[in-house]
Amino acid sequence: MKKVNDLHREAMALVDQSLIAKLRGEINGAKELLRQAFIKEREAASLVISKLELEPTRSVLLRSAASLALECGEIREAEKLISTALSGQPSEEIAEELRDLFEEVYFQRHLKIRGITLEPNEFQFSMEGKAVGFGIANSDQFIERVGNVEKAVHRTRERLSGLSFRERGRPEIKLQKEFELYVTVPRPSSFAISFRIGRGEQLKLPGMDIAQSIIDELFECLELFNSAKTDLLSKKIQDPSYYRNFVGIARNIAPDGEEIKSVGFTTIRDNVPRQITLTTTKKQAPPPEPMALKEKAGESIQVTGVLLYADARKGEKGVIQIIDKNNLAHRVRVPEGMMSDIVRPLWEYKVTVTGILKDKTIHLQTIEKATD
Image 1 (cartoon, rainbow, N blue to C red):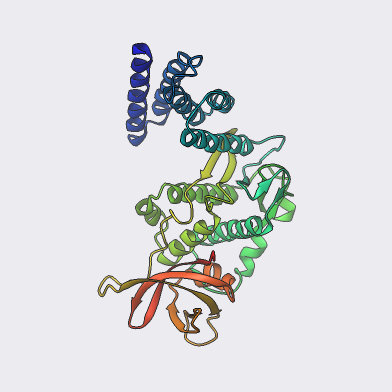
Image 2 (image 1 turned 90 degrees about the horizontal axis):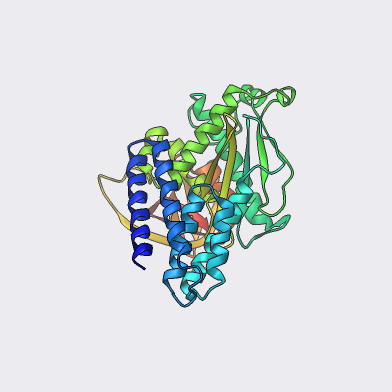
């Protein structure tokens, strides 16, 4: 066991070194250190594979090696290591963790481009979870996320064009003519589709700079959102309205952790796939920033009820009402950037609102469909 322990300690030390290298921006060095860690951990696990009685050490080492394999892009190797671990006698807790890792392995396989050629102005979107089967998916889970991906693309295009945030109405006619979004038919298992940015007569061209810029910007923002780096995200999206809008849309795209466990994006840059896997759930995700209440902080509050209206033309602009189960009306002020894309689609649904109560008005932070 001494050799096993020594190999494991060496692997973990290499993981730590890899993290430090990554923080320094030494990406290639970090990848190489991580690969060395995987090799060490796999070697440690190989020494106990035949010792079925050696639990939980056996399954823990195999799980750790599989996780490192996945981080290194060794998907097939991770699959074999997980299968070997489950073939033994792991505890139910570790077995469940291994099954979760298996789902991540399968999803990583679906993220890869399989028989599909992506141009630089395209990206693939896919989902994985209980609500997704082979060539079939829950319509609400799929359609809502596709709609929010479309919103994120259009808003990114407008922001990069230097336009002021559009709280209502359709994009400018000029933008509509210059910019169109197309989707392919869904593909089986992970239920993947491709989004293509371009004009009808340009669809056969090898790519467009503006389309690539939009996709790259969207991917960078999604990565920051998924890792909860809100400080860096707010520096990238400096306009408060665009920031709230993006975070609200990203929360709607994010997995719920149950029906949808992972949401993935893939594009091609320099002939190499670039992949993002959103695993941060809506509950874990940072909320869009509330309206400026720093001077007079109020009480945090959560209210569930029916969204009565969400139309800036009716009543006071930027204000909605929530009618709870006791038929009480709650006045909610919606910050700029959230009404059109986040709030209005929930009109007449039962929703849960969180926010800051100040002067008998709830200043909205988050709003989503109620689960009960």
